[in-house]
Length: 185
Image (cartoon, one colour):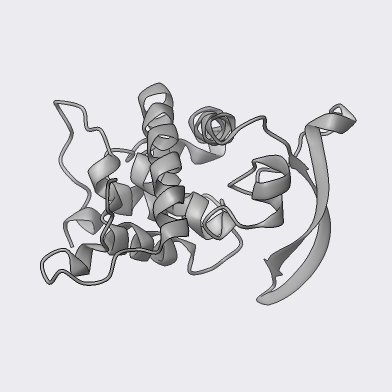
């Protein structure tokens, strides 16, 4: 059994992530890596988003619809391809609860693939895709592109990436442009 330690605990022999988290990472890592191979979206960020958005796969949306990213359903879709659930959004600095139609997926892998395709194909995420080789720059660009209404979204993603050493799952191209200034920090 592969044991996953938090990055800070590797050298000290500290606590392992709990069993539920370890099980989630073992399922999410291959799906995120496959998505990265197909779309270029960093596996580390995909995993961090899935953890943050789905509460380690424990949200109602993840359990009922295999939707780990809060991806909304397209207008005029077949009734069995979406699920309606309440969601919290931050509007004008205040948290509000709204009903929304969310996409339903057959599996975690399908959800991760749809997430990667959304980021790769939607013009609004082009700035993030331009820095996809650099997880911190990618997370910051996602926030600037409006992926989430959470004003601390990029910081929360990078906290998870760093805490769990998720960059170990990223596959890098042999040649990369120079890192953006924010990635060197």
